[in-house]
Amino acid sequence: MLTISQIADPTAFARTAFIEALVRAGIKVAAAPLGAPGGLPNAADYGDASRVAEYVSPPLSEFVKIILKVSYNRGADLMVCLAAVKAGSRDCGKGLHEVSKLLAEHGMSPTGTYIFDGAGTSNNNRTTPSDLATFLREIAPTRWGAAIHDGMAVLGVDGSQAPNGVGTPAAGHVRIKDGDIVAGSAAGKLVALATTQTGYIDARSGRRLAYSVMVNNVPFPSLEDYNAARADVAAVAVAIQQGY
Image 1 (cartoon, rainbow, N blue to C red):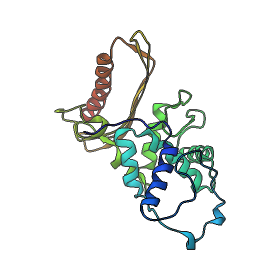
Image 2 (image 1 turned 90 degrees about the horizontal axis):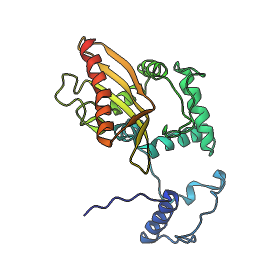
Image 3 (image 1 turned 45 degrees about the vertical axis):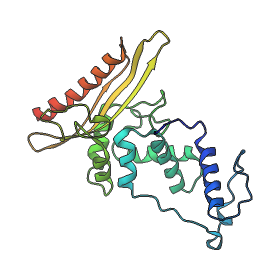
Image 4 (image 1 turned 90 degrees about the vertical axis):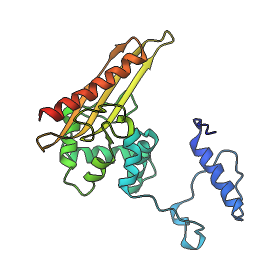
């Protein structure tokens, strides 16, 4: 039987698992497997002579696929930290600065888009459909733009969009990154603070379109009504695909 549980402290869990794996491999580890970890040594203290293992991450195309297909938020937040490392910093906040620069380079307005985290889960994040559609259009010809396109969920086929648009002429022709933030009360009331879709549409005419649809601050009587609204947003993409 498979049991899935949320890990309260992923960093401590990974540290313990790594130490235990080293010990099983016969490597002596001075650090205790449990307890608060200390800070990382200075990067200059690492040398090839002390290397015991090396991990090569998957290519960008595989990494973003995991994030975009199912909205893997931890992976999206990690990308911000990796952007910081690329800029020579261990401060993930530096990564947000680098992401903001990239967005501006590809047409997003500095007064229309504000980012506070990598996953977009902060209620302080702000953007516009125009900014997102412009960004997707501008990155299409870049060397990494295809990885973003190919990594998105496909309407009626896979990922978070597998149940939407099934049986419609647009199924298989719309690539979507969706996002949802829902607030619920003890009385069972639901408010969709954000229900969004952004992506690419291969229209019936043969044109490729970049699009973004956003629904904000809508109350719903039940989860069923909310799921129906998400399907309605997907229906907008179907109408665009057939209409253009």
